[in-house]
Image (cartoon, rainbow, N blue to C red; front, side):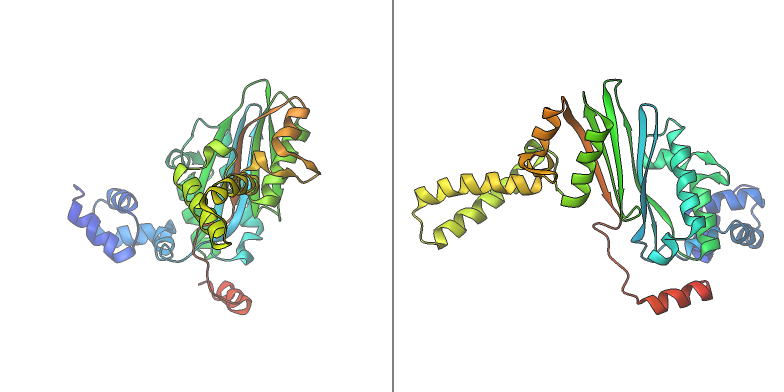
Length: 292
């Protein structure tokens, strides 16, 4: 039986499942709507879909490395309670290693990879149904280094922050130091040239206004702005920050003194930029018990 758009639409409205999942369910059940609903429920897709509108801003970030290829990823859950669950962390390892051993480079490609429970997307759907919380692979980045480069991986707070650095011409120890710096000091950018022009201009305007409000003449205020912008860069740019193990030198100087050059730094902090759940711990535990 041919699966029509109207049949897919009706099944989506009944279950909340995605278009492709509904289309597959109808194909598997030869267009029988009731059987398609049961098929989605058996796969955990219908139950998972009902949770899609819920907020998942907790979870863990992790890094996987093999030879010259590395993967940094963030997988979210609704509560920190679940992020400590062994089944959740095992799922993350499956996802990370599957991506690492593939040729995938994008999130969509990663979700389509085959693993132990179908695709990675299928795995997340199944675990969402079993664990009882919305789970999602939020983001990934795949990095490939050259032979004269090293990776520096660092996880902070058990995976709440993950940093992957690539350093040319130095050691893994130096690269890890750079990653630890990024984890601790939360730079917004790696290099000065990474800072958007509009951000710099806005900061200059703020600093000029502050200087003039202090009673400084315009020409003096302009000179003060130059100095304050340099200080601003030392706060927001990793390479310009004072090195935490030796405050007399910058991070870039530390790397240079050890024969290296910073090539790339990726920092993931779980839930950054996302809305957080407003729920207390007692409610969190009760939701786990009830399976909500």
